[in-house]
Length: 454
Ligand code: FO1
Image 1: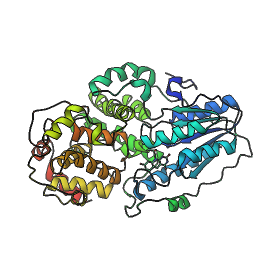
Image 2: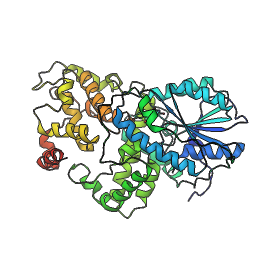
Image 3: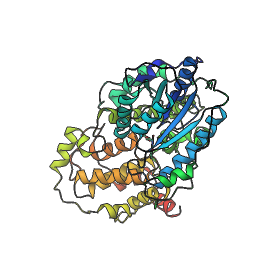
Image 4: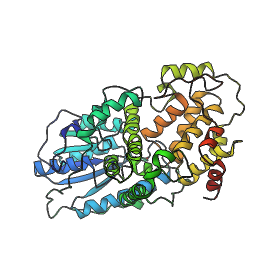
C-alpha cells in the first residue's frame, strides 16, 4: 500500500523549460473537476508546501466549448460549485475567469507573479492549444499532471495503438505501479488573510455564448458526492450482473458513471480501486476494469496520437478504403441529419435510442453501437455518417466531447481498434449489427417501451 504523500513523479511532465519561481502556485483545473482523488490537485498542494507559497485553483471558462449547450454547462457548473465549497473548506480560493483560456491564464499568472502552474491533462486539440499558448507566455514552471488516467497517457504508449490487444499488455505491465491508493490531501498552509470570494455561477452562465434551448437534465444529480453515491450503488447492487448483462439495456447492469468521468467529477483510478476491492466475482470485476481502464485509456491514446480524432480521415486505411468502395451502394433508407436528430427513421429501436439521448442525455453503451452503425447504413456517405454521429453525440450526450465518444463513433462506423469482417453492402468490411442481433441479446420491445415512458 502506498500511503506516501508523494505522487509518482511520472504522472507529471513539464510543458515549458522554466523554473519554479518565488510566488503563489496555481492549479489550472480544466478536466478533472473534483477535490478528492485528484493527482493534479495533490501535486499542486505538494508544490505549494515545497515552495511555501499559497495555492489558488483557477478555472478558465471559454465563451463556448465545441458546441456544448446549456445542458452540459448546468451539469458542469453544479459540479464546480461543489468543488469550490470543498476548496473553501480547505482554505484554498477558487477563481473563474472568462475568455480565451490560453490568454486569460497567462494574464492571471503575470498579475499574481505566480511561482508555478499545474494543469490537468486532456488529449483534445482545443485544450492542447490553450496550453501551448500559455506555455509560451508563462514565465514560471508549467507542469501537466495526468489526473484522468490510471497510467499517464504519454507513458502508456509512445504511439497510436492498433487495438485493445496491443495496449492491454502495456497497461497491464504498468498497472501495479499506477493503480495505487490516493494519499490524503493535506491542504497547504494558506495565509490567514487570503481572500476567498465566492464565484458567481449565475452571472458566468449568462455570459456564455451557448445554445440555451437544450435544457438541463433532472434525473442525474451532478457533482462529486452524487458520483460517489452512483459508484457505491453500482458496486453494491449492479456489478454482479456486469459481465453477463452489460449489453442488455433493460438490465441496469452498467455503472452510469460516464457523465461524471467526462467532467472529472469522479476519478477512474478511484473507481477501479474500489471495484477491485469489491465483493463481486473476479469475472465481474475484471469485465468492469477492462472497460474503465483498458478501453477508456485506449480511447485516450487514440485522441492523443491522432489529431484528426473527430473526423472520418482519422480512420484506419483499410476501413476508409472499404467504406469508400461501398460509398455508392444502394441504401434501403436515407435520412438527413435533421431526420436523425428528430428520431424520424422507420426503425422504432433506433428512434428509441435517439429519443433517450435527446431527453435524458444518456444512451446505453450497447445501443450506442447500434445507433452509430445505423447512421452509417442510412446516411448519404460514410463521411457524412461520421459527422452526424459526432454532432448528435456531442450535442446531446452528457459525456459528449470526450475521447470515449470520438473513439466509440470511430469504432462503430470506421473500424477503429477493430478488424475487417466479411464484406457486405454499404458497410464493406466494417463489423455489421442489426435489430435481430439486438433481439437475441435483450427484450427490444421492453427497451422501446421504457424509453417512451421516460
Ligand atoms: N474546460 C475548461 O477548462 N473550460 C471550459 O470552458 C470548459 C467547457 C466545457 C463544456 C462542455 C464540456 O463537455 C467540457 C468542458 N470543459 C471545459 C471540460 C474539459 O476541457 C473537457 O471535458 C476535456 O478536455 C475533455 O477531454
